[in-house]
Amino acid sequence: MLVEKMTFNVKFDTPPMKEDFLHYLFKTKQLGKEFVSTEHQSIKIKNFGFHNFNAGPDFLNAQVEFDNITWAGHIEFHVKSSDWYAHKHETDNAYNNVIVHMVFEDDKEVLIKGHPVPTVVIKDRVDMSLYQNYLDLQKTKNEIPCSQGITAVDPFLIKLQKEKALIERLERKSQRVLDMLESEKGNHVKVLLLLLAEVFGGKVNRDPMRELMKRFQLKWISKLNCDPLEIEALLLGMGAFLDQPVDEYTRILVKKSKLSFYKFELHAMNKVNWKYSRMRPSNFPDFKLAQMAALISLPNFYEKLTTNSLDHKLIQPSAYWSNHFRVGVPSKDKNSAISNSLYDLIRINAVVPYLFGMGIYKNDQTLKDQALEILSSIKPEINSITKEWKSMGITLKTAFDSQALIEQKNKWCSAKKCLFCTIGNEVLKK
Image (tube, rainbow, N blue to C red):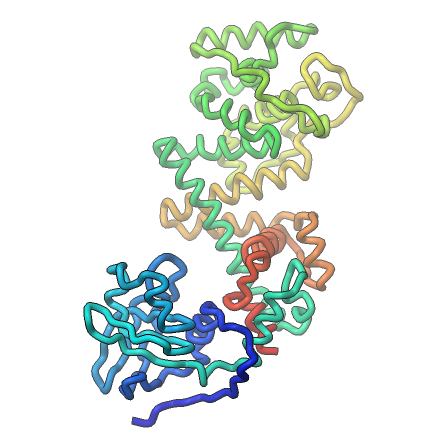
């Protein structure tokens, strides 16, 4: 059999090889598919299997032809064959079905249950100039390793990587939605309500806001006739913001809150859970609860949010909040309606993960597409990460782009996963 061979000159002063680079070369078929083992056995890769990023062999469910006989199993990579024993694979049954051992250097025979594992030395097939490019990317101090070379990358390839990063982000966020569905026994509207509470709470008051809404029951909305004032009194009372009346409006709220507490057998939270320090008044928790009450008292608020048909500018708490950010503390007149920026946060951080998670839960691609369409209807976020991408000449048109590039930076670039990034691959080649 004619055996394919690609040879590269290897210098002895080259830096130590990294195993993930060998994975990359194999996965992108840059090592070829026909080899000869250390025992002079002809080996042909018929199916490369799939790359395993979890515990166990590196490539699972591959198909390999040994002297015209096809075997199915796993392929394991090491820089040195002795790493098999250094990593204690001989004691792990997951490695008993390894059919090929690919190594950069062969320094020790490897046995599985007393039988030699077919070993292939790939040192002469590794392009060390490409490896040096990879090491240079890894050593860079730039937050985004390929920032100096990304302008030469085909925009279509950048688009592909953005889509990959965004889907990973949504799948990761969806796992939390699935966990919440399980804890809420499938009550998907309650899950959306909890996600909304976290957005209204922000970074500082996220936990107490979620705790409050965890105790809140959706049936109370209809029992209070979807009355915004009744629901506002209930939420503020549950949050311990109505311990005593301080003006005419709060006297009304206290009275309504006490009636709801009696009707639903409730008691208030611990008020010390709420934080005010170092935040804008528009983010004060009592003001946010008033806004949330206005939202959830809206008939069919769930359908309007998930179909992107809500006119958020009409969602406004009572007139009291036009000159108050805190209960009993007057402020300058303002527009207390849900702002454009808050509505964008609601859709990005609550509605979109909810819809995508429900798409996974129900195996419904339409719901996933709906989530992506909502992201594509929102302006891109402006923060330090998106500004960094823009400075590199990357265009951001919608929140689809900004969410994708935030994930790309945090989960790909910061971890320097250049080898398995479409953009990083292209920069390496160039």
